[in-house]
Length: 171
Image 1 (cartoon, rainbow, N blue to C red):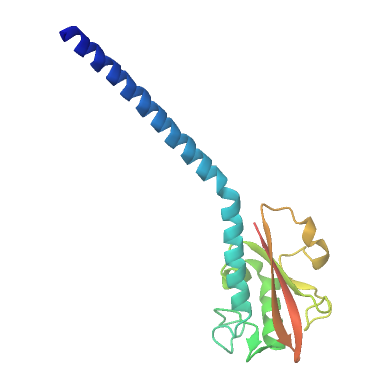
Image 2: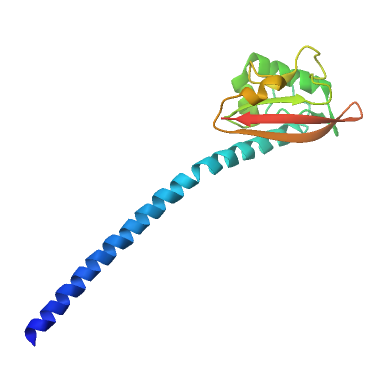
């Protein structure tokens, strides 16, 4: 009788070890699967979040409300409820002179480019098509090679007429 109790205990101990190994293997597989699964969608979520925040800044009055290139904190383009051509020209100059500073002012670390889709040019400068990353224009947006590209379209008012702003952001 004493011998059979030892055998049952040895079998129970082996079962416990195998069960623990299977359980830990399951946790490791689940962890690896879940961390690899979310990387692509998280990247797009971050781009979308930054793009929405940047367009919210652009479609505000900015801070201070009558900002200029020397004191701008948030480069909003609106005056009242319409796009102000003076603010638009100042932001165009900021982005042309130092693109990195313009990204910082919009609160993003990602590359961006936006343009107005009503007539294809920036309303204050007929030779400039959009504002943002150098070398990009509305005709070659699809050729951007990136890990993610997000387009955000917003409506605004310019000269009492509706205008669509297409804002692209990518890694």
